[in-house]
Length: 318
Image (tube, rainbow, N blue to C red; front, side, top):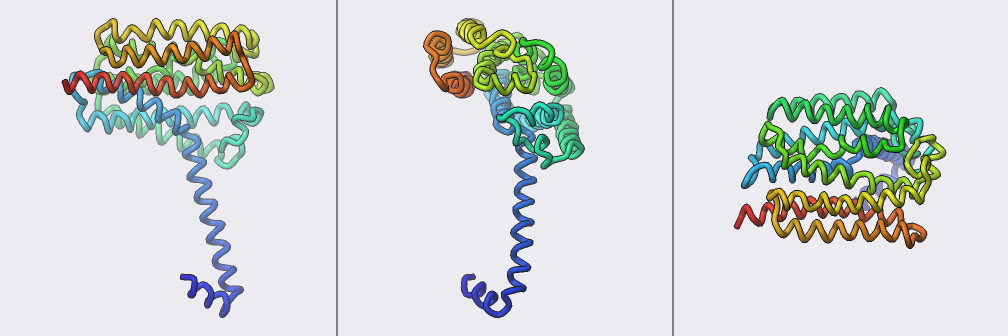
């Protein structure tokens, strides 16, 4: 390849330059578009939601769910979650342009137009709904309701209406374990609601830690997040109280008999860790601790559901 390139340059330098440059530019544009559309779906968030949905699927049956349910269920829930993320990018594009954390998002920067994003989101929504409908109508409608809850109720109304926006709107993000359960059984079950309670209780302290870290951004954008409306100290107190509540809620799957000692030990350790971060944030704060608390909360919820999954697998194989 090196010899051919050298000969080509020596014999016909202008032609080589004129053909290679456009190709390189074309490739760069192609990569940028692909990455922009992927970014619209908030893939890390969707991956976490799918983990919780998978746990809901596994805990719904004594052994393992069928391959059809897992594939169609995760694809459908993933696509609908991704669609909600895309619509969030479109609706929040004005706010995104004012915040350092979001200023480079594809729609905010104009790399993807509003119409392109809407078409992309609508396609994901319709295909995801159809995949879930192939399993059962209940999971299809519940997932669609979660999409509406996040993309419209939270993003359009709650986010701008009350500092309790993330508490109320967090229900939509807490639904995937229930959706996974319903994908398998086609019915609602109180045990599945315990999984929803775990995520629902975790969401406010998780997000408020980020809101403290980005308080000036939210104030600049005019979004009434709790640190903006009630101050940082009040928000720290609420984070601590919610982590204490999370310790209590964390016992419920074990008390209800849906999980065993592996989950009990793992969840208690993880919840204590979250409460320790919250305690330090309230009484021994230092620069960057809010951001560290936010990052810990992500690993916390990941570990919590892995503990549930490991516990179920252990007793299923025993």
